[in-house]
Length: 189
Image 1 (cartoon, rainbow, N blue to C red):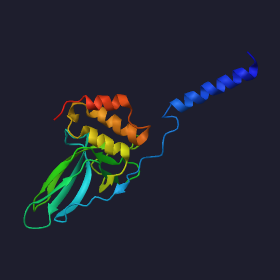
Image 2 (tube, rainbow, N blue to C red):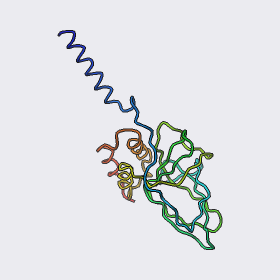
Image 3 (cartoon, rainbow, N blue to C red):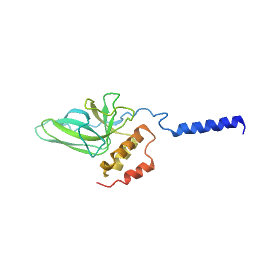
Image 4 (cartoon, rainbow, N blue to C red):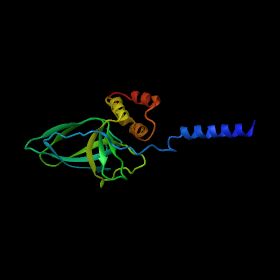
């Protein structure tokens, strides 16, 4: 074989290897985009912070949301699947909620545990000192697809798999059919 042919083949093999490795050229850091979500106006949001003390069957990680009713009675709302929580620190991961959460807020400060997943593999996991903003509602097609896939599934049986699916969407090439099949194979709630 001629030397130029060897160089061409070697270059082709190296190029294919580089293209196959999604971590060699990581995609741009995921940023929350979508329409702003607003709470029921009868609810006053106090804070949303990282929470490492609690467990939720609806997320590998948890956030603590503190709120109170703006009136003299309980206030109600629903946080929808696909809702993002934007970290105010660039070093901390943004979070996504894949399961709907029903809220019942009292007239005193009410603390709620929200099950969420991390969106930025290369950032820090939220600590109790990390603060988040509510919203937006994701316009990312992959995250919306994942929220629909897990809507009626027992994700608590494999929260790690669901977290990897989020990272595949936000930090890689998106869900593949094997992951979709694995999620579909989870038992229904």
